[in-house]
Picture 1 (cartoon, rainbow, N blue to C red):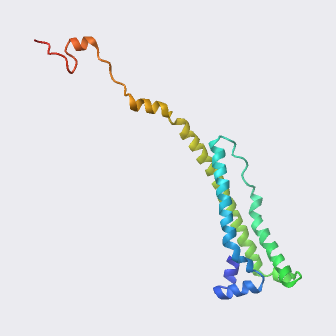
Picture 2: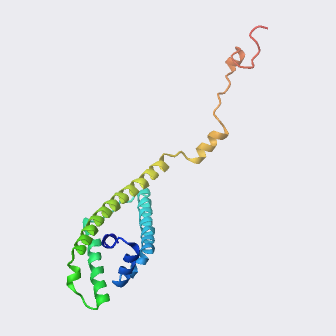
Picture 3: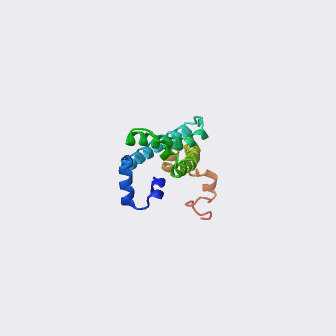
Length: 173
């Protein structure tokens, strides 16, 4: 979308250009983004639960995944050309806009992968922190006993006879 925005800054002209070139599917971008956010949330919750249960965090995604957006971009453009024209013409795929698109996708893929790796490590740490907080918590039964019957000092008989108690008779009398 960024490359299309750079190529055509006007929104109406860009929408017409996308419709003419077979990129009308870009209207589903919000739905796909929402689905991805739900899946990311589920993965992070799973990582927090794994950390809470003291499971091993597992392997982080490989750096090869950073090239996936660029490969998907190239395949998308190739298939778009195939569907729209009926044959693959290589000249549109060799334009400078395509090189810019691949470069942007590589940078975005690397940044997204870095973010994903950091989020997975942080989610596992959150799970471990929650487990440690639960382990340090005193049992509820001990708390309720302390609230119901606070420890009081037992009265000592010698202190009471000697007038050391609060309500003892005066030592003279």
